Image (cartoon, rainbow over all chains, first blue to last red; front, side):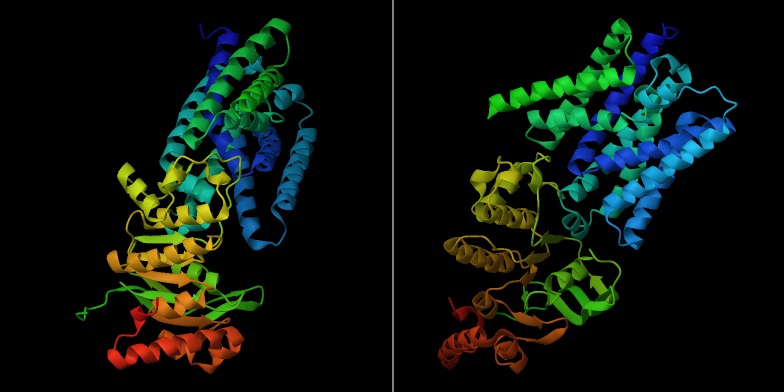
Length: 263
Length: 251
């Protein structure tokens, strides 16, 4: 059964949606959408490095994105530049470096479209293992740091004053962001990863009153988007990543209507 | 009125923060004991909130030292901003940093007059309502040390008096120590045990009466201060002739 590329894509996509659901909520709560974009840009550098030294793509992306994320945390403390300027600086310089390295790799046949928009045909059995093992690890760690992370999201000072150690939780969360980008890059593509994080979570906000409820709806929204998106992609031969995000967008619009009715 | 041994909760010694080539606050030393209310007063920008954050360990990069002898610390920050994108109800907020039974949540909300808000969304509360919820959350787990940064701002006039009354009652019943930052000199002078007047450093400190008579304090607060002082003196003289206690006599 796993030999069928479509089944593999489905299993991979559902695994990704399970993780982007909760992480996407934090991205919205903490206003990190541009941060997600920055890590995704940095991922291109990771991909080219993996091609150059023949390394697993997800591993290379994870390492490079983590390094960029940690550099960002460091720069935020040591320079006076605003957060968005720092993000732009890191996003575009790592993108530029990635493209320069890619230029040197002209001997490698390389599908740049697949990298940007995701390619279900390319999902291998190893990718499935990476997505599900990595994904479950991310969810487990997120569950462990939930309390301090959520407290620090609501109010950093309060969390720090009452012994929640928010600084540590923030750093771990940053690494988790790098990890989700690393495991979902093949499915959704690096241009659309932030969309996968944000659109289902935004939809969930329209339907929920409490944080856990929002996480729940966000996961459901992501799973539905992957399911419907991939079937559509198979039927009308559209690229997988954009199809998934388009479905998520439709779900978001439906949620707007439902939220209006509730008011 | 039996004398009891006072248990120390926190000790700050020569604490200060030097940032961007200037001292936000420097050379601050004081202690807080169980069952006492210490209040911080001073003009805007004098370092009251900064001092509270040093005490709480929110600022790590400091000069001097802070020793905390308890972990049961609760904090009411001066401002808390809840974005619409974060759906959080009062009841979720109550358990943000602590485990609480349902009856503990309700009891605390009731004390601050916010029990009807339990299932409301935090981002939709008015300033005064939010203040009541913040205070309820802070006292729910019966802390040893309570740090209150302008705890009644935005609360209506009658509510304000009731909340100050409650804060006094909390320090008596829980026997906890309280650090109070307040603009209300009446409250500070009438119901706190120790007053610290800040202006980048400690201008003067001591019992309310000694601070009220201090020249530095009078310079800092001007007419308003002398008004309070005359009010205070009047009451004080009156009380002093009958018995020694001066603190609890002003309403």
